[in-house]
Image 1 (spheres, rainbow, N blue to C red):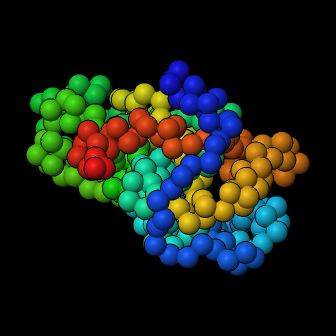
Image 2 (tube, one colour; image 1 turned 120 degrees about the vertical axis):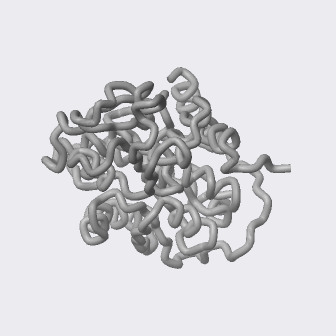
Length: 300
């Protein structure tokens, strides 16, 4: 917790970084910027409607068109930022670390949830599973059960629970009878219905589903929670990051969203309260997990 908060404070005055040139062209002045967002909502139409106000606000604040692109998976969003399909992305921490590692994408801001730049990964089961603790899941009671991860670009749905299993000497593919990879809301829904024994999720999704009446709290039993993780990153491509003036304007626009939510609450989904300037160091814990699991290889 203290590590994360120190990084937020230290990153409040983001300094310009010297980057190696990446392939592709820097966005021409005035050309449309492509904003990519993950599938935070159950379907694309609702997702687009949720993030359209933020897109329109950024277009006005930056004085140039901004086009919204909803990308189905976190892994896909990371790739889209790397290959130039998007210029700016609101993405999960692991997706950001992947984009940074492979294409030098750079975080410039972190979203706040209920005033905090942090969240938690968790594992859930249902009341009839007979699993009352994570030790049950790791032991004989859990062997041969079904377990769901999120997609492989997900921080809380894949990287962090995988890292935890590996630290306990558990290979999920061998320990569980059935392992699948799906979306967070589907994990909660299927676990609650007893169709899955357990699965990985994160506190923001679980809370939102309960608040929206999509999930009964008593049907989602939390048996494990991670240490605090850095929230979703607002990242830009390596090419766009070279336009320091634009980056500063973008950071300034993001910093104003918190105060503006009082009069324009639809700028962000419920419980999101603004942005705080951060830099790459804030996501060190995610990078370390990626290296520890072998999902990242050290740069030479």
